[in-house]
Length: 396
Ligand SMILES: Cc1cc2nc3c(=O)[nH]c(=O)nc-3n(C[C@H](O)[C@H](O)[C@H](O)COP(=O)(O)OP(=O)(O)OC[C@H]3O[C@@H](n4cnc5c(N)ncnc54)[C@H](O)[C@@H]3O)c2cc1C
Image (cartoon, rainbow, N blue to C red; front, side):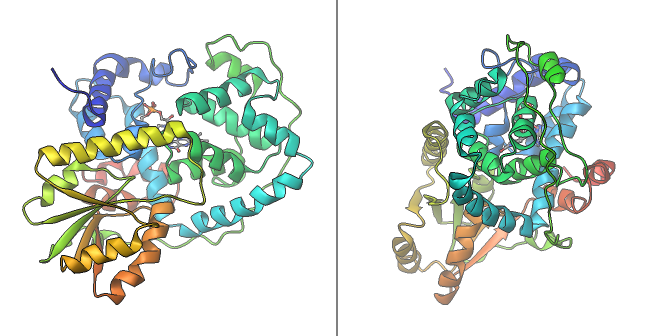
């Protein structure tokens, strides 16, 4: 009997998707079957991808290998790769998001819209579908892509609430919370990611694609809000240097909680003596208990599997046990630490803070990027359709 852990759970989801759902994905993927059957047509793989349990590269390989690869599904997986690559080259967008969010979190408490904001986050707006989405989001950590678009659109264009507050609400509740996909999708709905193109939800569209009993509702009048984005976008970066890293002696591998990639560990198993898992408790975000318990499950499975493979992991909560972490490195004479490339987000911010402390102690952190991402991200500094034209040049 196979004991289910998050790794074989992800493999089973992918396998079932290919066998049973892929043939209908193109035609039915926009239908939201609601909380009763959220994964009727879609794969449900995003929480596992966001935790690094299954990689986009593996999914794409399996899809291409299958009998009838669904082009639409491939494109969706590539959307995620694209958002990541785009954000990596536009770090200012991440910095600006955090700055604006802090401002809006204070501003909203004194705003005339505060009452509506409270109603929106508690599912008391009286707009039936909207209230049902927030309940589904908080109780299951999942919303269908279309529901996410409708939700964000109503939040921004009908309620006139700031998009960063909505993005943060999603980030704290979604099991698949991912900085790039989340922030950039919210910016896209707001009309700032693709200039001049806002996503406006309509009663007709919601009625057509939500096959539950949400039929009788109306939306308030659209507020015509122009959101300015004066952020200077960065120039394109070359990621090749992260793909050819040679491991030196006295090394450790570092694993972060949003990238529990077992294959990375296996690859370097023979060269590495120390494995360090860094957990962190952010003061900036309050993750829902549902999301946290999913995360803890994933981490437990990761550590248990490593144990079975005789890989012993030392764990530190980085922002609380910084001293202990440093002591551990010094005691074991670890000079070089290797981790898989750390994407823009709260984890990267922490690592940036501790890097100078490590360096002061002659300890160096090197990041290693899979050549798939390096080759894909080359085409992410322009629009998605330019990226799509280059799919064939991306090495799987
Ligand atoms: C406002 C908003 C916020 C979002 N926030 C997140 C987030 O925090 N984390 C996250 O993983 N996705 C986010 N998405 C993208 C998308 O909604 C989810 O990836 C998708 O719904 C996950 O369900 P699934 O795995 O069943 O998708 P499937 O339809 O089975 O798609 C397969 C995979 O393709 C990728 N994908 C599908 N649609 C998109 C998309 N529109 N953009 C980027 N990647 C996509 C995902 O990795 C997904 O797992 C957001 C979308 C919107 C509109």
